[in-house]
Image (cartoon, rainbow, N blue to C red; front, side):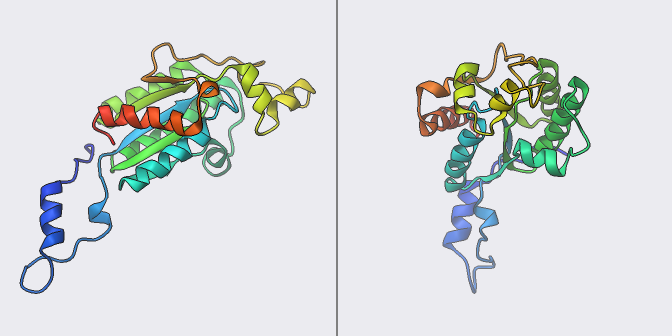
Length: 212
């Protein structure tokens, strides 16, 4: 299956402006007015780095511009798609590959797929990029490079506190490795700017690449 092609805007405008009896054309539907160039935007970073918040802010902006958007939330994926997996290196790799498969499938069908998932290992992320390259789907890697000290202060889900109390182990960036991307498409220092500013940087990159 090849990547979806952009909508012909000239034809769409003509269709919208000349519909009804005698024109031979049916009125355009909302689906026809959507932007149909798909892409995957993978936001990688430590727990509580701000990945999901940025993804939802970006999703709202893209939807306003007429894009079909899905956010693949890591917690929801764990609950519904990879519930049988644990947190060993092998299971984390499998989790990322399954998410990458779904993202690539959606991207090839005209969806902007935002993936705010840690994906701690470089080889896992590279495999996902390779899958997209093989299918022809656009892929953008964004490193939300919030320092662990800031993430532990935010501690949105209480994971850092639980790890410090000895209630959990294997927390990425603390007692389990996080292999930061060496050459991401974009690196964001979320601690130094607002969520809106962070999302705007991603949107700017997508625009520069003809994806927004």
